[in-house]
Length: 329
Image (cartoon, rainbow, N blue to C red; front, side, top):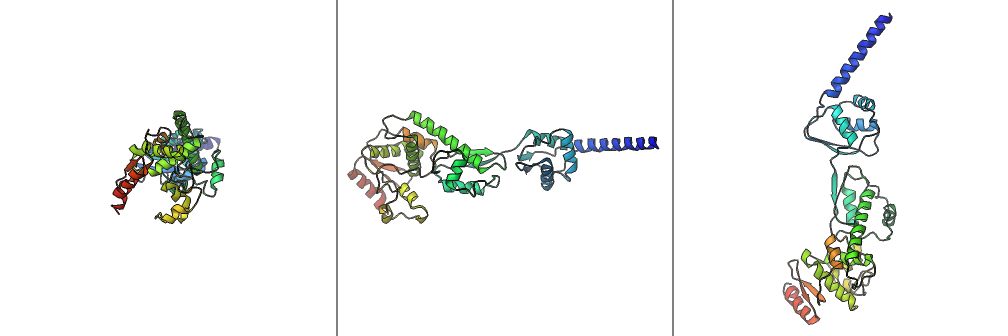
């Protein structure tokens, strides 16, 4: 009887070993190749195995679960987007997801975007975990360690890469820290005679330059005009700040009444810089703000092709307005 049980046990072990070798070494049959799938952050081994089944990578979860436990890798699974060029064996698959051989997702934050537009882009991205959705602007700033109370303009426009399931707060924190580094670098490069008292004022100016500029090459000239105005205590009179101050009430058509309606951001009615940035400035706008063109110009008007005509006095400016604006209308 004992010999019979031992034979059965040996047979069972041989069958198990044979099945294990077969399972470990046999390529999985993917729906197609190349093939991508996603593992969520915070998943347990069982959760990962179930996600692989749901993604049609595995036929059943248990064999893979046992394999990963035998390898001692149950706590080393990495979330993210994975991309398979060919059918892997379960052993190759386990090594891939414990090493974290992920293909990254990306999101582009664009120069000139408002904070509201940036939040919309984050909310619409399917690979991002939307932890900031229920939070107010101030709560978001607190969560990412920002000292400021207004979020506008604090995030550096760039392309950010991340693994699937990353929190939008992590992306916002990276963008905030990137802007702090760029702003620090720009502040260090500034001419000390410029009319700025803090790096934040540079950020405000850069945001205005960003919104006013159609051609990148004109940024230093645009900045030069506004710096000249600040120096002689002349109102900036820039439409983008007025539009920003109008908020949701702006319908796309800036009227004379809007220019006369006083808000903290109306630079036609108030002197100096507005209380905060009006958009996300890029590195070019930051550089222009601290290294403006040496010019006598106090005015500029759009030519209709994305460029501007710059003038040093009002009479010359009025002629340019008549030529490029009134005649065109």
